[in-house]
Length: 462
Image (cartoon, rainbow, N blue to C red; front, side):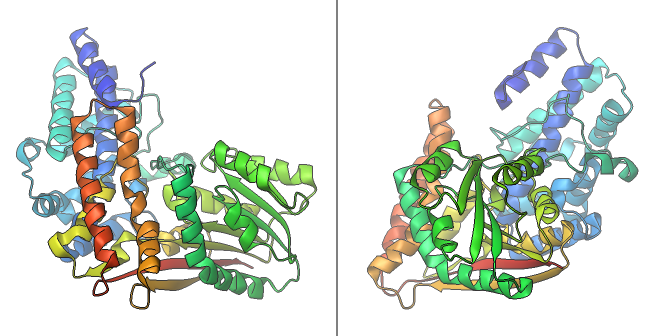
């Protein structure tokens, strides 16, 4: 069984071809190419200038028909998106990198070979396997892709380029979950600051949901509860009769259970919301406690970490009792502005964040409405929370920096811990730390202005 490192998969392809096996390594090469294209798009769309990004987003909407985004596209649709929007040229311009050998690759032929291998159980020739391997190497080298969070193996069932065949894969995770973990004393403190800043906004969002439901008693499911501190604070009112809080991090749930002040009203469950049996797990747990299904689902700054947010939102719609509501709070790095931003420090920090290994979807705020719509919700209200430095003292400015920026080197630190020999990750971490140090000084200056938008949604189930 292969391990999940990109290097090992490249070695596998090379060894198989050398041993005279061509079909399996050819399939593996096309799977990695497809995943690499998705990762390239996800990591790079925020780097494009305004006009280029608008053009690319428009083509993405046209190809998806308004019903699906790039993470659900087939490989043929991805190639069509790149070609029709001039995405690769826009990437080259934004990053000041040449496309080099990519211009020599016939991507339509790669798609044809991929479909032949996956959908027709076709066999690859020596020449086809070598061609695909060379294309793969050129793509990884050109775009500097040294790791992929998840590389689809040949055993995976890939979505078909035939729309009629695509529906049977609808429940499969099409994206990549982030590697974020809410543990550690520094992260716990940052989460506490974040929760304090959003307290009034969350109260407003929950108030909108409660008004719609029109009940006096509410049963809640909180997804992404971390150590449970914010869950207990947000739902302290006795009007919230039962609160089931869920997180995939076992250490955080253990801490929440240990500090739970009210075991009759609060319960904490370690569960992977990306798992196929998540709905069953929740239903069974509620049944064991004798609790009713939730009429409020609450999730703050969580769905952008998931491999398939729409799948979870659809599951929440099934779990909700009627009348009910789902309340989401998210963020979007594209909403952040700063002035003066000497040497483009904030922009460079955000760009470095977007390309960090294992990063979450940092452009999710703009997607929440569409994701809820795709999940089957129709009555969706979007609300916004603006934070800025204009009325803050130095301590408050530092808190805002801690909340929005201090964590951004964590993904690179984790990458270095996993591979201490990576010169690239060490260099990226050093550059990120230097930029963050300078940006922190900026936040402490009275003449520095920073603002960001928090995104909230209340989607109703009538």
